[in-house]
Figure 1 (tube, rainbow over the protein chains, first blue to last red):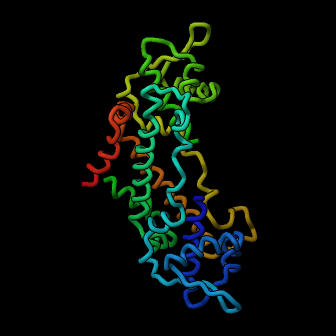
Figure 2 (figure 1 turned 180 degrees about the vertical axis):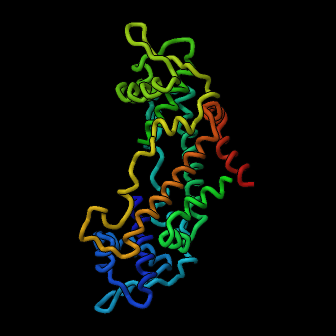
Figure 3 (figure 1 turned 180 degrees about the horizontal axis):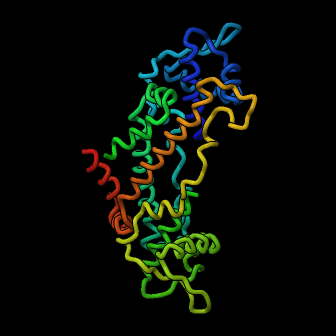
Length: 156
Length: 156
């Protein structure tokens, strides 16, 4: 779900603002107005990939292990929104197992064509995020308009 | 829904292969393995925008008004999948009407930052489709790999 990326980004910014302490998932959940279980699920992915340390118990909590500038936004997008959702359900035409299928040249080939189109479009979409780090996102947070400015600059 | 784009593309290819006749929505529905009502809803959008003529009655049906090379793939994408889905539901933080909201600098600003990020990313995603016409899509249908080749060429 697209929300997972937003939760990861928001959590990282919160942890960055509290680098000197361990932050409990309950505290994060309050700040993000979300369920602690959802926070823990997403942070466990970040933990597994070395973004942060998480300790359990009375004085447990999360702490960032990386600087914001060392966290690529595209990596975070790929981690939290993997391209595993099959394009198949967005594509018309008979299924491969359908023996009765209309085997017109269009119906027989459209699935491969649309899959290629959607796959390349998705790769280019992800490439956009890979241009930035969490430091860029923090910069926009402090001074809105950096992403819009970047778009203008790359067009001119 | 993403399927709407696929249905529009598939229908146009079918109508292109039958330019000398009027095609009923029932015939299209059979070829696409979809409900005629869904087909009619999507084709009425294409009709409204001048892609095709649709006549009702006994000898009615759809006929294309444009050449494939004159149909931009990005225009079709924008028509069938408009960017109206609010990013709001993918963004964390308190709602603007929430008086009790945690007004930390992060929570107060993340919505605008993520909206900008997602908006620009979506615009660039759509720009990908705008590079092609339906004639390019038909070319890939007849000879798979043109979209993948185009990606390689633009990287090198």
